[in-house]
Amino acid sequence: MRASDNAARYATIHKDPASFAVPSNLADYRAVCAAFNWEAARKGLSGLPQGRGLNIAYEAVDRHAYGPRADRTALRWIGKTGERRDYSYRELVLATNRLANALQSMGVKSGDNVFVLLGRAPELYVAVLGALKMKCVVTPLFSAFGPEPIATRMEIGDARVLVTTETLYPRKVFL
Image 1 (cartoon, rainbow, N blue to C red):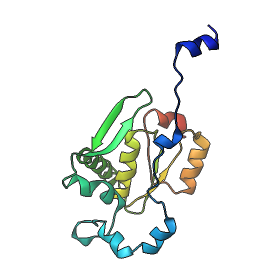
Image 2: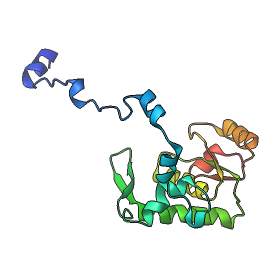
Image 3: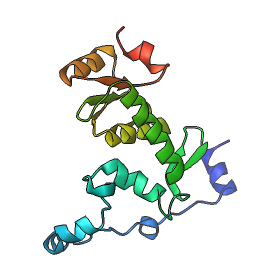
């Protein structure tokens, strides 16, 4: 079949990029900077209960999980083959708490370096948020790295723990 036959058989689809352009949410950066106010920014954050400071994992997940947004979608994952999984704030807080508790049971403390070697899957977000709940320093490792670059980064970064999978561990980590 020739290309001209296909052209006659199928209608040409014309797309106008302007019709599906998304407007910027920060159209005037200078004006936003000039109007910025730290007091207003602080009011948008909940802070940890009992005034114990600020934690990004709490702000991103927990405060929503314990409020009216608990059953709303916090994370939507779409797999390589199109499978989809939605995680509510309630589900995400439970998963990140489990990870934080596991780290704590291994003796991980605030300020420890937690390295994360995971693919683009929900577990990646659970690991990062769970470690941040523990006030750990999180270092993501690119799963395409070989064992040598991973070992080097973990040594230089004084890794306390590595969060990875059964599949990646034997391929990417020196024993």
